[in-house]
Image (tube, rainbow, N blue to C red):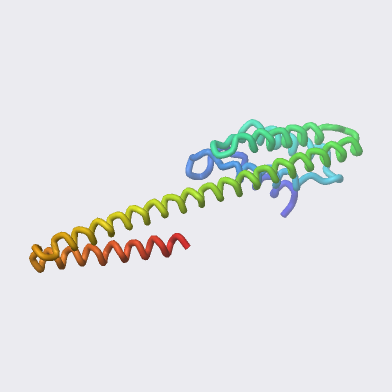
Length: 181
């Protein structure tokens, strides 16, 4: 794929296909794709066009899931666009090297935040699952107490219904406990 085709395939639309704001991960990937197009032998036209796309990135990027990372990605894109507009090749390469380091730092922070959010989500799911197990255990204890209380006075149909309810709750508890492992 040639340079122009690669540039044209990078989506800088602020909304995803489902018309929802794009998540920070998609913006990170778009910025990475733009930065991979930088090379020492770029023509003035290519540098100008890529700088313009980086400006478009800054103008369009926003995310509801991680605005702090977007701010850092925007700073990298702005610095990269400025570096591409520098005429002196050595100064341009040095400036781009700095922005690449900035991008790597922002990317590390983004990945750390993502990992932390995944762990928090996992912890919340586990907590909810344990709460469900506790509720099932309470129901099971109540049904067992009811079965003992009505055992002598109950009709066979009542006893059978209570036993069936006990069996169902025990199965539910087993399923929930299996999910918690």
